[in-house]
Image 1 (cartoon, rainbow, N blue to C red):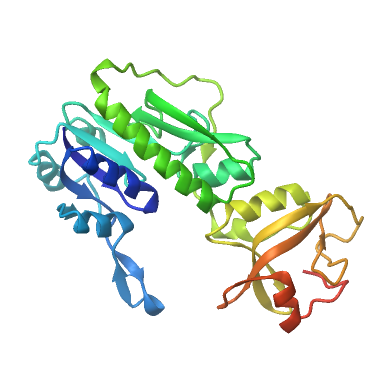
Image 2: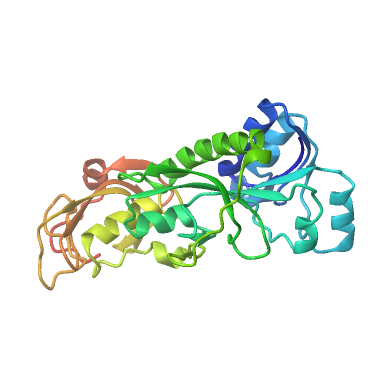
Length: 303
């Protein structure tokens, strides 16, 4: 089929690659404009999707909005039969959704209607869900409300957001190719009204560890914030990220946020947490023993 593809982060790249490899004609790729990054943010860095599209020889467009008539006319001129969207980052108005005769399909990283919205992977981990997955849905004007054509499930099983996102990206790519191959025979199933939850965008303030919470919740937060923005605490005026941690069953009443031994075990509201992989500001990830050799944090230190 003749496709217009819309996506921005690493999550979307496998779907673009899979569609191209399956022989579909990608008329153009739409992605978010390059953002400041690189060394000290002085350079504009193209999105992962833009970089991959360029290596595949596919035309790239990065409008700030698709609401202007001129942007819609440019899209219509591509004469695409169908649109495929994966974490694009822009709202598609109904006028855009109406441009492709076969509509627009979306790769969404959750088991809809659970975790509609911007951060489904992180929210599923933080909530303690046992599994998540990918849905291929027909897009409509509502936020991730469209009927589902195909889905797949994976266990969360202690994975970080980065690990889970990579797994879901590969699964989503395979499901999208399968959907496109059997599109005429597939029936889109409306999402149920019950079980709707929203995965609001992650606020950086959420990454600060609240030691009054249960240790199991904090450990989930650590995994959900890995690789970015990274769960963190302050000690001696320095911010330290926690990239991995283990939960201990011990409870130290009234000592939330205080270290209880020389190995950086920290008392929580319920239970205790022992970070296992950390990162100082501007440094590289390291195990806790290496951190403590150069940055002692004695028992009784309040984080």
